[in-house]
Image (cartoon, rainbow, N blue to C red):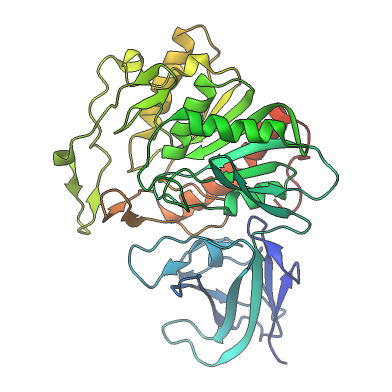
Length: 420
C-alpha cells in the first residue's frame, strides 16, 4: 500500500481552527516521523517534527496517537503547528498580509528521526487569516489609519477595536479572525505607519477619533464598542475605557494598567509616567535580556498616581494574564487593578491567569514566541512561558475572549463550535 495524508477539513481552514491529520496505508505498528514546515512572508523557515507509530490497522490519527518524542510528546493533535520553531534565532511568528494564506508542508518519513528514512507521503495544508466572506476595508478617516474587517452578511455587527503593543505599524491577523466570528473589527495603527508619528505618543484623543469612526459606521451595531489589546495596546484600551464613553467591554491581554514610560494625556488630564530603570535589566543564562523587573516600584499600590483610573470604565474588563510573562509582572498588575476597582465600589473583575504562559498570548495554534527583538530597546529579550502550557492557554483565552464579547456586545457567537 501507498501511504497517504488525509486532512479534515480537506481544503483551506482558518488559522484559529484545528485540522485533523490522518496518515493511512502504513504497515501495522510502523514507526514514522511527521515533519511540518512553513516559510513566513520574509522567508524565515519554521519547522517541527514528531515521532509516532501506526496502529494495528496501519493508520495514524493524530487525534488518537500520542507523539513519542520530537518537538513535543503526548497526545497533541495540533502539536505540529504550535511547536513550529524558527530557524533564525529570536524570530517572532507573525502574519503581515492576511489576504494570503500560510502554506504548511507536511511530510511522512519511515522510521524515527534522526534515523528517519525515505519519504512516504507529503501534503500541503493552507491556513487562512481572512475567513470566507469577510470583507477587508482600509480606513483613512481624518487621522485614523486602520483596517476594518466586516463579517459576511447584511449587518450591522457588534464592533471591536483591536490594538497591538510596542512595534508600531498595522497588524491585522487578530482582527480578521475575529470578523470570522461575527464581529466588525477595526485593526488600529497608532504610530510608525504611513503618515502617523514615528514615535509613540499616548494621547487618548487619537483613539477617541477611532472610536467615533466605529460608532458612526452603518455596519457597526451600537450602542457600545468592545476593545481588545495586548501589552501596550492593552494599556491603551484600559485608558480608552477609563476616559471615553460608549465602551461596553474591554479585554486586556498582559496589560499593566499603568502609564509606562510616557504620560497619558486626555484633554486637561495627565497621568504621569511610571518610568523604568534600565539598570535592572538582567542577562539570562541564554545571553538574552530579561526586562521583567525594569519598571519602577509601584509605591502606594492602586493609589499610585501613574495608574490608569480604571474605576471610571463603564463596561466590564476581562484580564487575560500569563503567569510567566517576562515583559512585566502582568499577574501582579491585574491584582492591583482588581484592588483599585473594588476600592472604588466596583465589582471584582474577571481575571483569567494561565500558568506556564508568557507575554505574547496569540490566537490558537500560533507558535510560542520565547524571545524576539524588543522595538524600543533594539535588543532581543525573553518573553517567558513554556511551549505546551502557552499553547493550551492561547486556545482557551481565544474562547474566553469570544464568549466575553458575545456576552457584552451581542449574541453573534454560539459557543464552542466543533471547529473550536
